[in-house]
Image 1 (tube, rainbow, N blue to C red):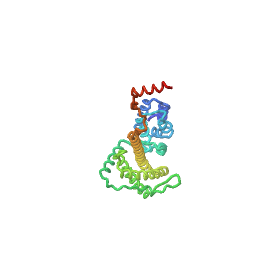
Image 2: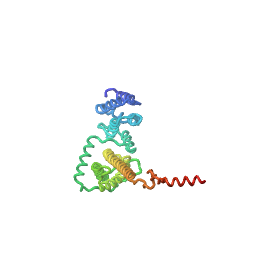
Image 3: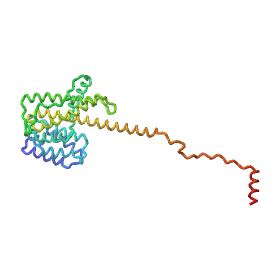
Image 4: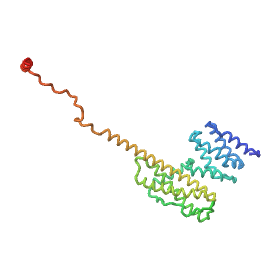
Length: 302
């Protein structure tokens, strides 16, 4: 904080500590050190951490399968990127970490929800399940903002108002999808729920495309933050739907195989006429003594 080159030296030391390090314990301790420094150091240090050079070349590289990081360490790195992309007090430029975050989202990386987000989702799902008559918007939203072909888009207040309204519709759809997934078990699901889930999934994919288009061009920071959060929640819900569908198909396949095995076991055995008759043949009638004498006499005349 005090030395002019202090932040740069600290970044170099952190890079050296992380680079090509396969020791999970050391990586975990280094991440704890980074977290502590981000909370206690000033903008000069924070602005270097959120540069693409450190985020992409140091932290994101650790997510490569060859490092075989435990899930909790991977989630911690993803949480750092997500949290830092939402900004810092003091005017720290987070455009580069935001770019990395959006790039990971486009690649389908699933960011873990924070504890507060998970608790909110649970509460909202409970409220929806206790009030099934709630109207559910399923038509594609985000149609009021036309994404231009130019590189940036500045929204006027009226557009921002419409966008917030339509994002509320997206949030409602996400809550309904989450509630359906919580209340249904693959293999014993409610048919009407699954029909609705399929509609919401299709609509959600269309919404996500619009959100990603807007994230690339919108300049308003508050709008960008909300778009990122909504896209995060929507992406998690869509992945949950895909997981549910895969489990459904797996159970259907298992049931089909069990029925085929049962049919094979219950088939009748081959008819007895097709089997070899291994019973003893009835004894041949035995010749009488008189008959034997007659035969012997006939043989002696030859």
